Length: 422
Image 1: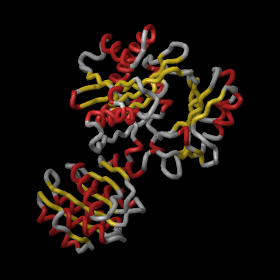
Image 2: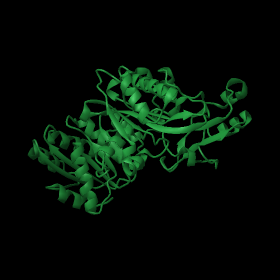
Image 3: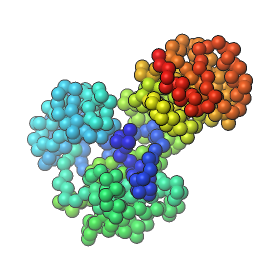
Image 4: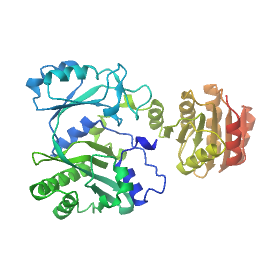
């Protein structure tokens, strides 16, 4: 999974820990396509190259009269990296193309829209392309990296800047950390002109370009604050041969808790690319991430979830998911959790590992009984419960006469679930 992240937030965590620890990001539900991010940038006065969004082939007709530029870049719009090296299910190569001929744009778009693009970051079958962005290709003479990310250790936003843009920024952090600089920002003050100029100077902009870069940095911060972003990443923030400073590529993450304020932005969300089990989990306030193994895991608490997955691997098994039901779980959520687990055809056994603190073990037990009966569960189920009301919970499970394997501790539970498969 680590290869799928290209986030400034993860980079910052890695940078601060000198890449010596494995880091996990909080999952954000809303992700925008590149073209949607460009619309937001444009709305906040950020300098981006000219572009148009094509959703059907008719919109690509007469392009030379509707959208005339010296060179076109045509980019398939999916929520995955590696598009330039990808391929389509119809045999067409690459999800990013350049051409100077307007009459070549339509054939390229035809080979993208309605076809699945397969890259190193997509599922094996690829992702269906519904939108294509046609943009002006700008002649870049220098690329830099700029991002703003929320950081709890500073109680606010932090700028991450590097004159080495347009490449794998995590590799820059590892190999040349002197080329990355961070600037904590007082959220009550914002980015002052002095800070903006300091960042622009560190990025290597000089003269008129330095003033332009400082202007762009302030516009990007305005966007960051006003859309309730947790991350705005521009890679590259480029200098062109015309002396312009342009945000060529953008990734924006949002605070889901601000969805009531950002309704227009959250309406852009396209759930067709979201894993349906993850979508169902979010509807029931469950935290779920699909993995590649065959042992389904239902736990309460992220730390316990990580420990459960680790000990399963220690005993030779492979977890099929991360599923945290949280502290305030009810019986209906337990049922939903089992439905999500059993939707995965790879799941051959299930481990329930719950430590009842806030959670009442009896509630979990009742949920397990109802879920097992209503779903007709046909895979081995191993249960380890401990904590609040655990005796009542065990009694309920025993009296249910369901085919449940009990474990006294986590190590025993992991050994048992790894030894039984449907």
